[in-house]
Every structure is written in structure tokens, then in C-alpha cells.
Length: 89
Image 1 (cartoon, rainbow, N blue to C red):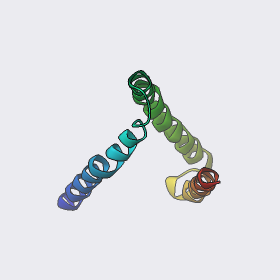
Image 2: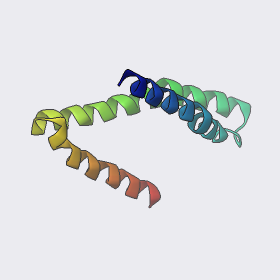
Image 3: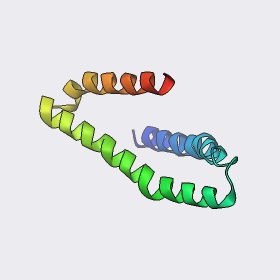
Image 4: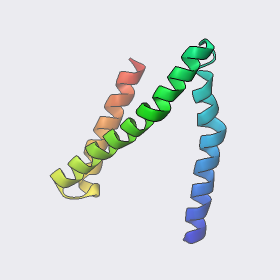
């Protein structure tokens, strides 16, 4: 099971660095140098930590509210699909 976990971690990190990070950097291409620097700083310093902590807060509230992660999963799915729908709209 340790090898499966290690393989999953390697695949997860390698796909993040090869797919997500280049796409994130492409968003800054049309900006001038000053806007690029300020935009990257804002996202790295404020955006990423705020998004992670906000997601964790929602998950913890649901887990404490319904009692377990298994019971909170349907609610998390509704939130996820709602966000996906709002993103595409």
C-alpha cells in the first residue's frame, strides 16, 4: 500500500507541474510586466491560501454538522457541481 500511495503522489505532483502550472502561467502572458508581477504576487500570497483554507473550512463545517466524511460527501458533491455549473455559466 505504501508503493501505491507513493505512485499516486508522484503522478499527482508530476501532473500538477506539467499541466496545471504552465496553464496558470499562460494567464499572465497578455499582461505588462508590472501587472504580471502584481498579479502573481496576489495569487500566490492571497489567492491560493485563501482558497485552500476556505475549502477546508466548508469541509470541516459539513463534517461536524453531519457527523462523518461519508455523510458529508453528498453535500460536498452538490457544492462541487454547483461551482462547476457557475464556472461554465
